[in-house]
Length: 507
Image (cartoon, rainbow, N blue to C red; front, top):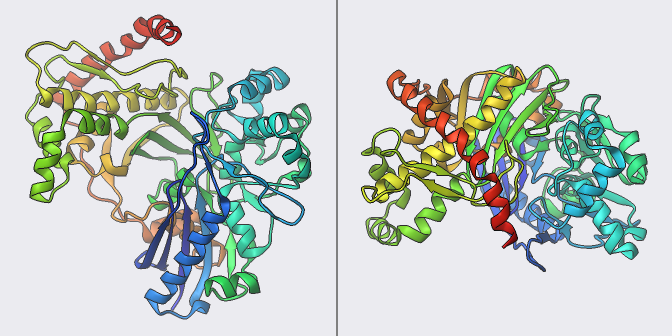
């Protein structure tokens, strides 16, 4: 029998999952690791922790499944995007990886815009320079740790470090490379112009592949450390969101997914390149060769409801613990009893600043319209509605770029809530379903490995054969009309508060 292995190198841990060719999970293992914050706003990890998690995860999956390693026909790797791994000439890690959520590079991003020109940078890479992206991290190390930079011979992303350990090959692929700020996204190759203007040696960067392409084979040493069969192919894989798209079947025009996790994401597939000249959303190469995806991000989606739970719902958490249920279940039950609009209460989910559509690190959360009649129930629903409005902000930009979606697949913790899915349907104006499989990125890259191994004809064909979604929840016309009125008002609030946010940040 044929099997496929998916490895997802996340921020808190690495998940390794073994699938059959129908997408069924045979075995799965997750190993966690720490994140260091040496200064406020910094975030780092030891790449060796990722490799340890992969070694242990693969070994456990093989042990639990009791399959023959030679029956694994391909391996796909997904990972946290943007994080910087620097190696010396002997492939030794020179410093802890600077992670995607590290915010130290604001000045370097300004420098990138000065050197390249912001408009020109967006033309070439489809995105402005952001603190999360890899390019600014490279400049930061060059400026602040020149002795480290002088020793650097290879720059990799997290999943590509794992590839190196598995295959001995320096390789990346277009979806993950799109988030470095160095890739010519329209032409799917490194941008010589950007590299020249930033004075970054192209030889430091890995060879770029398409996501389903074979990038190498498991070496004898990696086989000895993991239990894998020597010679097993490893394909390009994908960055975490691009991998999740494959794992939810968002690989053709008209399909999109919305994630309500800690952050919120609206991700849409497009066969035609579309770039927002204002840089409010990301355009990246996707895991389907010759296609792209457009993605808007709201920084505090599920995090907003989590903040409310942790600070204002301690008694609910205690009650849920006694009953052995998720406290969000009780909170949702309270919100369900509140009408659309939360009794004229609006919430701005800017607890962490905001990316799409405002690109404003200074904006902050707010309840607007709070009165003596409001209880926690109205506030809970207002938080959920505010997050949903912020996702519509993302969707409206995509629609303005002619990237449209007939149906949304809801993902993340919030996507498991029928109430939140109905809000999405009503506010976004389209059907909202969920994927039957919860494996997301790990399944996505396993399917990419199946394409590379010749088990599926193409990425869309793999998804057609494997991915199943629930019956979509459709918009309620009456509620949708009400939500439109509240969303129109919601849109006026950030412009009205923008100057106040800036002034508050200076106090």
